[in-house]
Length: 122
Image 1: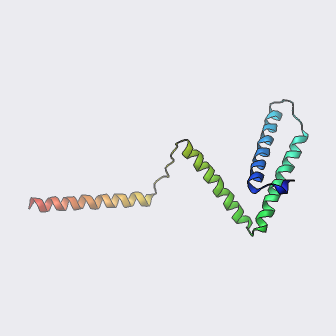
Image 2 (image 1 turned 60 degrees about the vertical axis):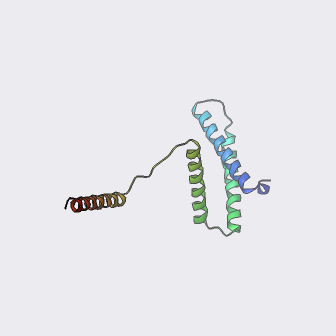
Image 3 (image 1 turned 30 degrees about the vertical axis):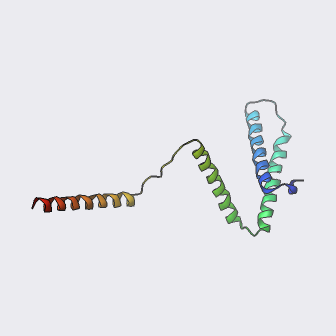
C-alpha cells in the first residue's frame, strides 16, 4: 500500500505523521487523554516511509551523502520561499575582506580627487 505512493506523497505523509507524533507528545505532557499505542504505530510508520524513500534513492544510485545534501537544499529552499513570501530580507554580514576592499577603493578615490584638485589649482 505505501509502496504505491509517489515520492512527494511519501514525504508529505511522513511530515503529517511526525506532526501527529508531536501532537501526541503535547497531549501526554499536558496530561490529556491520549492513546499510548499511537506513539509506537506512528514512529514505525515514519520509519517505513523513510525506508521506502531510501530504497528508491538506492535504486536511482543516490548515495547517502547526496541524499542528505539534497534534503538540506530542499529545506533551505522552503525556508527561503517562506521568507520571501513574508517579505523578510536577511542580509549576510559583510566580510572583512570586502570592507577592506571598499576602504582601499575609497582611499584611492580620495587621493585621485586630491590630485585633480591640486592640478586644477596649479
